[in-house]
Length: 205
Ligand code: ATP
Image (cartoon, rainbow, N blue to C red; front, top):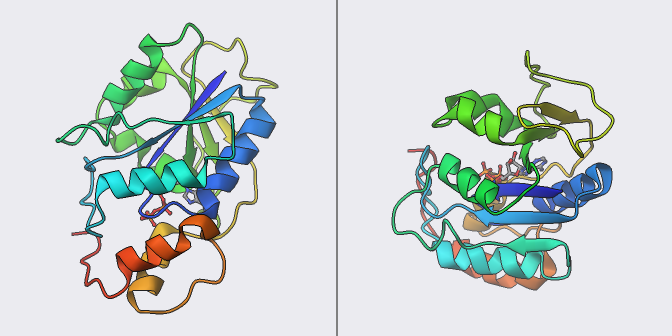
């Protein structure tokens, strides 16, 4: 089974990696397709870091996990790609139902996604706990032993403990010229610091 994991990765951090690793392990995934957002549909990417740069960081951060494929589908587009288009593309390439991995914060806003019902009908959604985010239940919540062979349209909740790190917190710390001791992959830490230090950025405009 393929797990799909999208995000801004602005920058990628150890929370992303831990989520992928735990999902692979718990759901017995064969592959995880990591798909960085190019231009965001729902919010502005305001850090000013180019999509190609974020893609490169993601490729490096996952390069040692042979079950991870990093796909540049959205980054390659000049316009924002609604996630549903990516979902349709994923489904067209597979003869099994993929599962879509997301943290609890994204799950909370999932119903506001473009074509949300279609999205849910095309895959099984897997929601993972995120530190600081309370559990949001859903009428579609099901208890299952495995997602293998399960038809699309289910929502699965994985109770996990992942590192309490966020891209916002990393950006803000680095912009303020402070050091990050944990949370960022050592292989890309210097590049990330160079990209954010000294930037004046408007968040969430
Ligand atoms: P930002 O702080 O800018 O919102 P982020 O840290 O949430 O960024 P994204 O790239 O937006 O990172 O997130 C991609 C996916 O990873 C989302 O589904 C998000 O819920 C999940 N995620 C990110 N960090 C964590 C974490 N520490 N624990 C659990 N899930 C996480």
